[in-house]
Length: 314
Image (cartoon, rainbow, N blue to C red):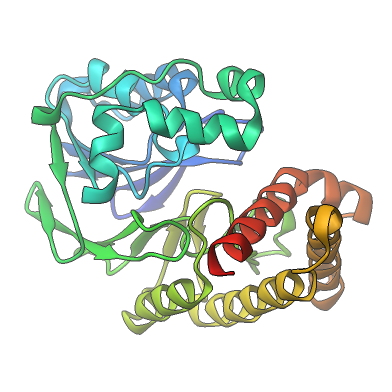
């Protein structure tokens, strides 16, 4: 089962098939025959998820929750299709995101604004609405029980105002969505992992992101699960890197605030400099050209998000 990575304690990462291998994970949590999925990938992920459940000896009826860390479509685009296939599941979502899952029109419009209509439709397809009666709003401070295993929701803005992280009571581990950055397995050196922040549009807030990262670190998790991709450890070291890199992104954005029509490209070039600097700092083995290809979409989205932040903070 090369598309499933098992971490023990009933936790697995399912490769969603989005974009390229090990780009976006759907995390599966199983407790005494009760199952939950954290994030959903896209519509194209549905057969992969159903196959993974079968490989784990689970039926669609055993999935009790589909948990969204936030509603960006690489995390939530497959929610409607999944909910149709999982008859007993309830969708958990931050209150700020619930209305967009019930009526995805603004969510789709925002995605088209970022990617362009043709690319957005190609990546995500049609996004069906989810009936309100199948949704459970889960702001920070709420919790659900999965076979007696408590999953507690933490309000963690910074990447998006509707972002939550989920703490697993059994392990103390945290499902962090995009709040703990990107950690691609191609960059690992042995067991040593690395992170890079994601400042994608349109709700990047550096002060809130710093605070949310500190909130996660204060819980002392032995492991954190990021959507891009899978389990990371050594949270204090990675968190310190995220704080440093967020500040570096902000510095680049502010430096090019007045660059007019050239602003986006200059910010993008600044992010590339940060990325190449990290490669040198850590001794990443990937050639620079391959690294830039691997991170091309992330660099583009980070630059767009920094631009949106500048426009919103002017």
